[in-house]
Amino acid sequence: MTPLSLALATAAATLSVAAPAAAQLPALPAPERTIVAVGAASSPVTVARADRRDNAAIKTAVDAAQQKALPQALAEGREYATKLAAAAGVTLGPLLSVSNAPASPYGGPFAYELGPFGPGNFCGTRTVAVIRRDKSGRRRVVGRRTRRLCVVPPRVNQAVTLTYAIV
Image (cartoon, rainbow, N blue to C red; front, side):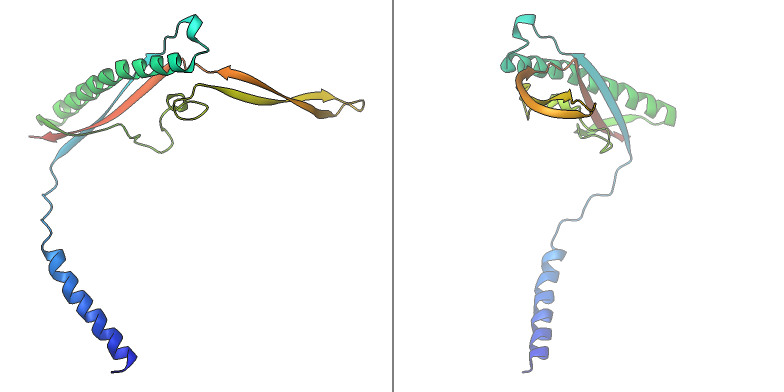
């Protein structure tokens, strides 16, 4: 057997084995008529003045604000979906899916939810350059200064995308 005929025979055998396996996959259901609505809510992050330099306290306050904003976002999404269904002259059915992924890659989650110093880290060290002017008036870096910094986000935003069936 020549190398070419061996390769063709191997390819034919592989295809004949793969075809029945693909035929056994369950058929996908027909796409349903749906309504997709987005709900958004915002909640302030409240941290006691004494705890504004404590990473654990800031993280707890951010988590609490997220938990407060999430039901509000879901309620807003449901309200908007109901209005869309009424305007379209259809009845809103059951909820099919919920997602908190942003609808656009440019409008992603606000960075404070992750933490400016890494996921869940709201306190860290920042290094800044010390700049002075020399005799000729040019600005020169003469050193670096490192300091501990904690960032408390003012608000936490939650956005959800809800998909409802139309009945």
